[in-house]
Image (cartoon, rainbow, N blue to C red):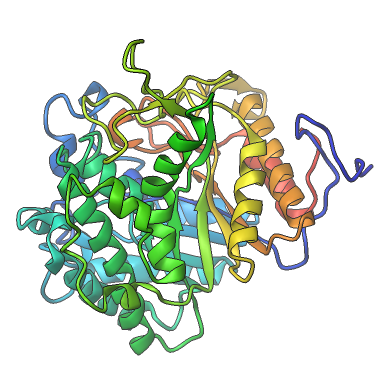
Length: 481
């Protein structure tokens, strides 16, 4: 029975029907699942270097093998088909295509992604290809990485190569995944590869990532032969303020976290207050005339990643400084120009990542984006949760009864449905993640997948959340938890 229009205050609704054509899918990233790190001509990426550096990744884990998707491609495609997925959002490893980030394409790398895309299409699954999910070829980092303007042009060349190879078959091209993480966690806090802690470098990386996006779409449009959507995915922060200083703290974090990307992407200019806030760090001379026009490309869909909310205030200079921003404490801040902003711990419950569970934040984010950019279609490109999964032996075989994840998904799909009811043009929802994987600096200690991976035997076990999701996909209606 359908609940009332207002729904349950805890977002545990059922019977809600999604619109015809809504795209239900799941997502992964190349370095997190593929393995085969030195096979078939693949070159090293910054994450190969970072994960092999002592002390950088929990338990000294690396992505050398990951979920071994490279060797289990057909099995994994069959699993996607068995769940009825409408779409699969994957990323392409740049160094599998151009081992040094430049030069001719590696044919074996192109062949792998060709098999992946053809396998998806043969099973009726839309390919959503992300060109960059944090794994910059190490050779480009050696030349400065994203602090070097030339990297943006190298990225455009790589995009052209992929467009020529797969440009008749990709449903949606996503240029970048979460450039906030690439720039700030990679170059400011050092929590992610390449592990640098330089605020000025991080802000240069922000711009060169934005520029790379615009250049890549320009190149793709020259060579694709079907009629794909063009997109970028942002991890936009849902920020609340506490106390009298809350509004100022929100402004600063919204600026460096959200508007420094949304501004040039959707309005063609950087926010003046962000430039002022960071003037003591950089003069932004890396922004050349004409850059913002290149960045400001029409987006067929804006990808939105959401996991939790953020609570901030300005530090009083006396009490112990709080930095519960959900990105760990690597010793340096990922928030250039906002050094006096505190990130406060929030009430639980939490996922295994320590992130608060608040589906209302997803509804709030989607509605806010719609209100500010009413003509911009949106898609949830990541949402999911890590929990401590346990395999149990049932008469029917091994199973994972991940009640918490199923409940998490039910509540967040409810939030998405409520946003649609409020007028948001939301085109789809890609659950993170299709399978357990290498979770960056956390190694294999966190499991986000709706499919369990036994890293010793490489067995794949659909969790109860996957079975629940199969019911949602097949009916378009949120089932009982």
